[in-house]
Length: 297
Image 1 (cartoon, helix red, strand yellow):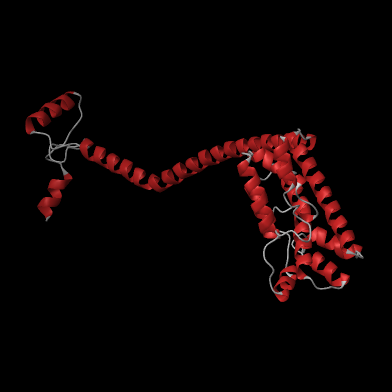
Image 2 (cartoon, rainbow, N blue to C red; image 1 turned 135 degrees about the vertical axis):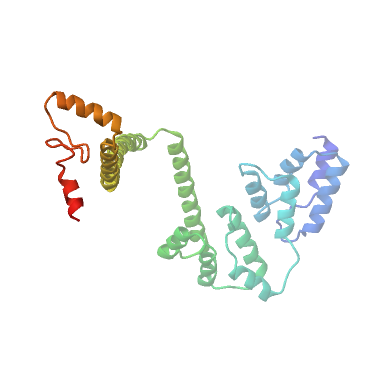
């Protein structure tokens, strides 16, 4: 930094001192940066030199993040801290209802709480201040319970408790993330047990499927047997009908006279009498009993 630049820089008021207003400080610092063509990184480095007290804490906490805040974000935080005064009742209500926000660190909340407390400009009992501070952590159950059990005597002790709790939670979270990245023997064991369970389950399912197949075969046999029993009577009837038809077809038909005479002649040669009337053996037509019955009638 050149001598002229450093001289002008030393004339910039220090933000955080009781007599310095934010608007005057911001105007002087912005003018100096523009006239000397200061880039954003150098602007942020110079902020530490021209701030003190709570203003410097705001700058340091903004830079100590995993992703540090940009210059405009830091300036907006400082402006919010040093905004114009409000009525006392409004400031007191804002302090009593203050709560730590999601993603807000304990250090950032402590600065915000102290800023609200300093702007009230009235003397509050330390028990009231501590109660407001403890109530601000009601959304964080474990931290809230730790504050109630510890019963801090002043605001400084309460802030130490919350900062300690935050460090513990961060360590626990980091250990959990490490455990997730490393292989877990218990998980492997449980997976092995699950595999055995899957094997036995699949074997059991296979046996069940085999038994189901046998049951299906037996059921089909039973169904066929029932069908056979239901159809057996019609089948017998069909057979009986065929037998009767065969009997009918096998009954001797009325032979013609020429054939009967030929047969009678052959039987006569054998000395066997055949009746030409009733076609029975043992008598001739003249002695046929059927003719005698017809004559009697």
